[in-house]
Image 1 (spheres, helix red, strand yellow):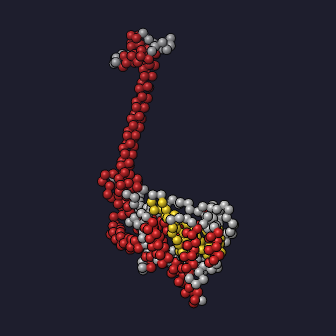
Image 2: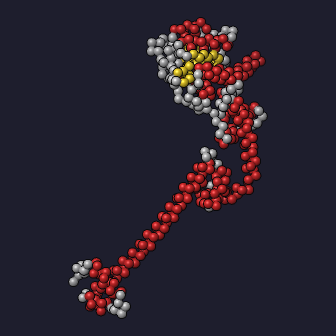
Image 3: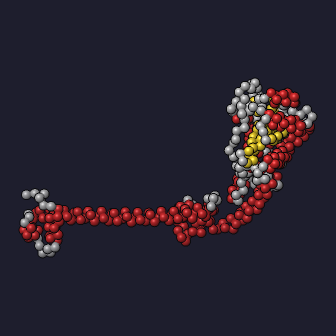
Length: 393
């Protein structure tokens, strides 16, 4: 007869009875149970196999649990290391030397091997690192001294100079330093310039305007001063949703801000006043024979502006409607002016403060501010050198 009529509980009890009878045999125990001795032997064998398999599985599970607990502990340590590293570096660059210093400061708590692995530095490099302590201290002192010079140049520019202009200023003062080192020192000592703000639209197209050709076609270069100009309008926020408006006239050769005008409106007189100011700054024949390029804002397409251009002997030029890139040089100038005068603020405190800031910036821009397109010299200096070279020729 098969064994299917015996429940698992009966078979387990039979196996237990056999193991609890030290002198008993399969035959004697099976006789007491009323089963075949072969059946009992099979039950005992199967129970032993299951017990061994269960022991192996239990051991494997325990080992897996042990590894998981160890991994959880390791992850907890890594999280704590990264948390401390975030506070330790505090926005500084993760330079190799800085990471080595972090390992040195925390080796007692976490161990060198773990710290080097998490911070991605070599243990051998860390072991060699202490020997260069005096050299690092010397470089730190040199960087601190350089930072003082950089900060002085930065402050003289009203906090507007970035790496290229600061590097040029250091070169003129006799300190030849690579721009990469200047960038690193400025970043380390948190010497930064202003950033761009959101653009506000000031050009309002006039659909009925008489077409004027684009004489520049995005060629914002000129061989001689007083030949090509670009003009644009930008807004100057002064609080409570109010604005002043600034019109500029830029010489494309020398990058000189030749004329500008500010007003509390955007009528055509704003741009004509700026153009007349540019003519006055040039003296003599003024702007006669030059090109004046602009966008298609209503002020620049008006009859009044056309009359003033004709009076001054200026040839008009305009880009395509709705394409800011056709007047990019003028827009870039105005964006730079607002970035360097506002320096992150949302607005000026009033109209007089805004006008003074524009006047101060425009004067410094023409006479002192270094321009990357001019070889890091100011527009006035560039024009003076151009005149000197032309006279010598």
